Length: 397
Image (cartoon, rainbow, N blue to C red; front, side, top):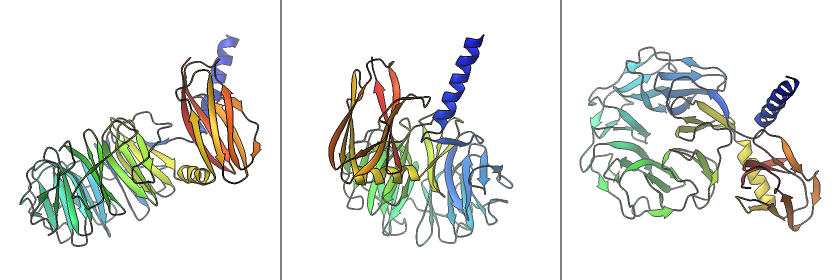
């Protein structure tokens, strides 16, 4: 009995220790599927399978905000000044009082599931599941159908860039319009699949995800070039923050890039599901929601900036990965630095550390004997001048 109690105590201590590691933290589990996230006046809104939830305290507590919402399956949300839009399976609803009350706003809109919104300088476009695209120039009071030239009415995603609006369809690829949606032109040069899951813009570069691959266009959608990604599944959502673009995928979790998709960092520590339906940046956190009721998670942006500070001061490589007998950490130090390095298991228990050393300029190699470790996932945690970065490794013995 004493041995059992001791084992339980060790596991509890391990879990507490692990929770302190850099990782995603559960922030909300209400609402079932969480399809969309927006922020208005420092209030976070989540559009879910069970309607709209909102938090005015940074995600610590949530309240349901469905008064007047005749359909509670909310797939898309957008903010335009003081007006909040919710796209449901019964069309559009608007709120002018921070989500306290909702009013149906489907004048001119053939009621259909709303998949996406995009706000432009002239108005709002709404993409529907089977009725194409609608446009409002009066902040949602009236809608006009805009389907001329559109070869597929299943519009999954919308974005805009420099006056050009892009629509991603599920079966006919990408279309664009330069005249407020009055005419649409198909633009699939370079794409090998015409089933589009997501479109986004970063610094005049356009990204499109199909069910198989991720592509980039640097000429406003005229031609698409394939990107090599470290994740295997389609992108469902994205958000930009300074130099970074964060994406949520349909099976590989969250990844980010700061070089327009040339390299990616997988960012999944702490997630209990890797099917991500929505992502956003609010306050000091990145927020991302899993499918199937697994919840909404948040993670500190400072983890990324810490990684950037380390990368500015030190080039790091870890090999081999997966490993068996020995893991080699190669550090190319650009400026003298105080560094601590440790290897931990998934419970946060430190199995090896270098006792914090002063590193000089140049390349240095640190070898860790892993021959006695059990097969599994481990973490190498590197702290340089107060900035921490965590690398996942796999040991196969």
